[in-house]
Image (cartoon, rainbow, N blue to C red; front, side, top):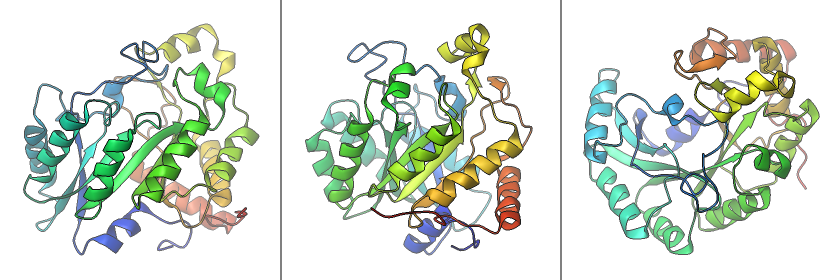
Length: 308
């Protein structure tokens, strides 16, 4: 643990690359099975995709154009920087395999792109696409991130995910068994989940063959079903004060497998879309606070991890 408290995502990148690497978000124009009617309509109740799609990631632009604009945006930071194409918006394994591969290969053919990160759902990884990824993994950096969001099936149903935790476990096991680095994403603070249930997520996912974990606080975003639910039933929600959320994250990390790389604890939606919680902190400011709290508590990732 480079910072002494938890395994940062940057340590994973440093172990693979001898130079600085920056993720460039790509919106490849995909949808989701709980939006197009295959499993449901309307999508997840908390989701307004604008909240995590940067300005340069627009669906009318090609993958190449988005990478060009994203690299131009970041290239001033370091002269010797390389890039990972991050297929982020919606479900990035949800199309015909041929069309998907065409998009991935277009990204990899762009100068200075040295790998892919693919964000997707655990119920959208067909065997033929996984076989392609297994081959791709032998020639480039590859990380598949699955949106789990919760380990509780009642929560997954409530937020209209359209899959179960068993689906998540199966997808993670199959992907990791193919030799591919595998990540999981969870939202802390979804409606009707107690603190004990949130911390139980850490115990459960710690038994899975994951490489990375990505956490963030529940954010209420304008234009979502959950925003309406919050107006009508505020008692369903426990929106953490920042110090309480920091302690929750550390409690979570203490139970987490110490081999996992933690990519983030917090997310920051555009101010014009965010209803709550508005902590007024940049991501780096939150990270500084969480490191300070780790030190104050004299604790570390995996302190209470139990392997089964």
